[in-house]
Amino acid sequence: MVNVSELLTYEHDVLVVGAGGAGLRAAIECSAQGLSTGVVCKSLLGKAHTVMAEGGLAAALGNVDARDNWKIHFRDTMRGGKFLNQWRMAELHAREAPDRVRELEEWGAVFDRTRDGLISQRNFGGHRYPRLAHVGDRTGLEIIRTLQDYGIHRGFQVYMECTGLDLMTDGGRIAGLLAYFRETGRFALFKAKAVILATGGAGKAWRVTSNSWEYTGDGYGMAYEAGAELMDMEFTQFHPTGMVWPPSVRGILVTEGVRGDGGILTNNKRERFMFNYIPEKFAAETAATEEEANRWLTGDSTARRPPELLTRDVVARAITREVNEGRGTPHGGVYLDIASRRPADFIRKKLPSMYHQFKELAEVDITREPMEVGPTLHYFMGGVRVDPDTQETTVPGLFAAGECAAGLHGANRLGGNSLSDLVVFGRLAGVGAARYVRALPAAPRVPDEQAATAIRRATDILNRESGTNPYLIQEDLQNIMGRNVGIVRSDDELKTALREMERLKAEAARVKANGAAQYNPGWHAALDLRPLLITAEAVTRAALERQESRGGHTRVDYPDERAEWLKANIVVRKGRDGMETRRHERPAPPKELADIAYAKIEDLEAAIART
Image 1 (cartoon, rainbow, N blue to C red):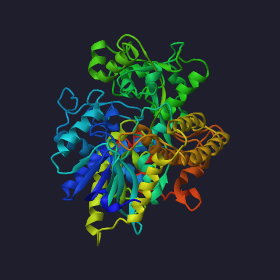
Image 2: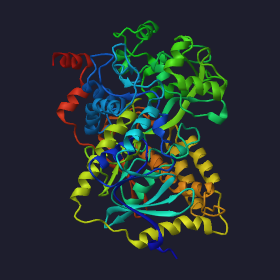
Image 3: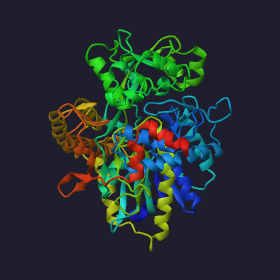
Image 4: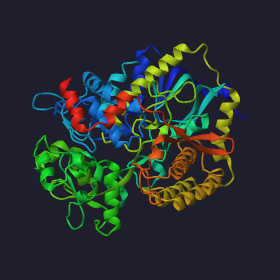
């Protein structure tokens, strides 16, 4: 019998779940608005995936090229997302990103500098101008350090190594969160008037991923179970460059900053193959010859982007094709070469993490020889459906920000937009939650039976006499997703994946973890299965529904973009009989934004210059 009155209980106005860039920025904002704020993080404070975003954060500061402007950043983002982005979110992001970068600088972030002492910015895929404010290749680490150092003085409470299990609701409104502390196994009830989800993605549903163990779709699963909608889940980004050797580190990210600072991709014939994959409609805005690419590399600001800096979906598919057609490296990737393009001192200064990563993990000196790289599951463009201005979900009192939320990136995220996304929409989620809390007529109440049911579900795993092994179920899921829901998909493969997931759901319902609740990795793995399976099914059902190829979603049986699918987002929600998908009709964009997004770049730049 579960006695809810004896649970560890904490009360806050707002509870933030996740302590990466979005979560910390949201917590800082809530505290600044005078609210009692708690932050729950699955691992230790500072162990956030934001740290793994190395290349920089995108903002139209115009420090390296004065022609840059928020309108061009907005245009790049919409085009990179294949125009499936939420128009208002893309506008807010492009407009507010420069202020958020300057805010980080005011709070103590130490960015690399131009010769004039301004924040330096580097080139990245899909961005017309050098736009990524950076700290070598450790930008995410500097952002987390800055937000933590600033945030600890704001007065919010942090609960480390604490995993959320279920959102608590009262009459359809958010009332709190049931969680457990990983070290002791003790359950904790967090009572809150509003909850902000900043839990990141779910890369651990795939075997080859840049994501760490925490990324099991916790926010997606909890939001889905609470009645919120998920959107754009079919758009999963495979970063073109992850390590492929040795096997123990397969999938670890190799920052796009290597290509942004001059690295090139070659196959086993030492051919610079990306020139063969320039999409026809982008050719006018992209380097089309070796000479043009070298002009960019030598600092000629009139040069267009080299082909290695095409959008990530294009580069990932190109690498996959080179490997599949026999032109890959001995370990199943391609070569990323910066050694022949830049001096050793430059590489060690601008890419210190990459230099040490390859030295220590692969015994490769990137100042002397090329790296072997290949695609790795990296990022979710989709997530919880939110209002662009407030970040509130379809469940009152529930908010989401960062990778956990859908809308900004459309069908494909541009590199560097993830970090500016965190600080822009982390802040807006905090503002939205504060406004919601102040308007709430009375504090919600957590029903005892709701909390007790969640605890029984979790402890049943420990109390069964026998059952299936959680590690084997997760391994099986990763194999299914890798085979059937990878970079390229088909109707048959997606339907096969759904059939296999039904079997896995039945096995997960009788999963068994041995031992007690005190730090028990088997129990933790078993509890992670529910959000992992929800997320994997959502991705697969949405991918089956979208019968076209767009951005991070490629169907071999529907190889082209189709105009009718630009009019719809795929929305997933929990129904009476299981998961339901529907097409959500997209409203027409505001004329002033459409004019910017669809303008010829020369016309837009001329108009900006006149103002």
